[in-house]
Image (cartoon, rainbow over all chains, first blue to last red; front, side, top):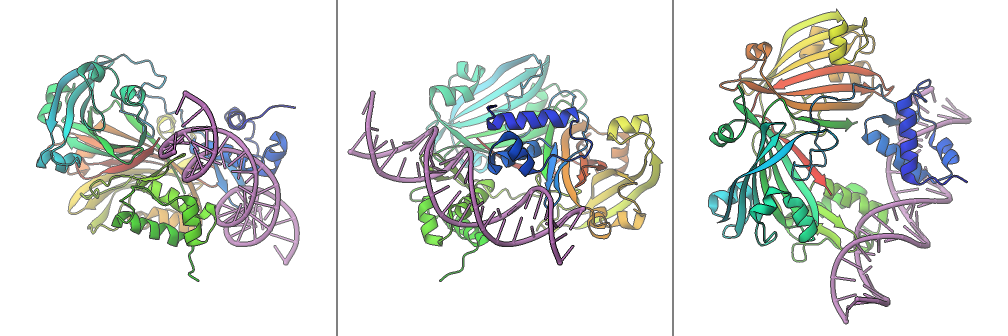
Length: 240
Length: 240
DNA sequence: CGCGATTTGTACGTATGTATT
DNA sequence: TAATACATACGTACAAATCGC
């Protein structure tokens, strides 16, 4: 008997969809047919189909079946991200890109009224205030402005900041990151952006503002990531 | 006996969380406790909790419980969106904003090689090519450049385009929209943008590129939405 | 350090609801 | 109308992570 765990089902179906193996009918086999083929529960099949749907490959229609979507260009281009980005330095994925981190500023400060309004950290607590420039393919592409709650994330050093603060948090501190709430907006570039980024003729930046929480529900980070135009693409799939 | 349908459970829990009714322990009651309280299945409770998690209010931790996240500022500001936006004109939500649509161009054209590369529509098919300017709070804020497959979405008129093409599709044509794949990027403004948008001193725009599919899996739309900086915020919640 | 007790996660089987054909 | 096919809901069992003793 063939061993088929759930990841297999997803990969097998995905391969078939991409190969065009089902394109005659533009449908997946019915759930019942797949249950028979893989000899698993409906739950397992539905889970695999959900993953395909999350990939934007198929769409389930009640009373009809699982429809295969026409394929769009493989979203090539330079960079793609959105959904699942740790500190934004994990935009490595598979693309071969030169990257380098430059510490532009490293301080420990106490949250005052103004900083509280911005970061929503309580007034009076100590935070690390770090500015880092991400150099990608010989361009200063991202300016990260981080504030970490020093009570929740103690012991950050410039050396750690040079690498990955997130691996330090997850590895050395063994802290679990639970949720990151994010906002993305487009803003007119500020002085700091002009000084640190290779904006070229552009006078605007993208700004991703992140609030990160650990699994005790405590906010441990506020970050603004300013990035230059034309180099980043954010993908999203909306299901109706 | 109290009738508690599933929507009730979510709203009740949400109210309690926002009221701080659970903040002593920073936890929700256990699933079993909630099952007893509402006299429903675990499925129903978990569904309600999932909705709270999607709101970014709580986070479930295996072996621990459902943690309540510290609250961040109510993301007030001008506009908020991302996740669930039809043609981008449905950014109405609850905010009171003046809006007006101006048809800048309306044509029917045949897809050539160049247009095929951009839209991924097959060469030779007829499409509606529409340019519309969205005026919001007395500013030309969005330039929509639409291409609709005229075979799948026939009968579009300037009058329809002046209102909502999506209500025409869903209402008159009774077509089901299944999936929209989207990319967001920041670009240097082009001639069209300068002509149609109130960019102010900015020389960049946001560009949301959408590919929309119906429930037969057919792509019926390609759209670029160019929008001015500083006026739109995109929110997102990432769970780990 | 280990060992239960607690608590959420995953999986299965089944029954019923609802949209499509 | 009937058959088909996915969606929702319930109950149950066991796995896995956490926490306290």
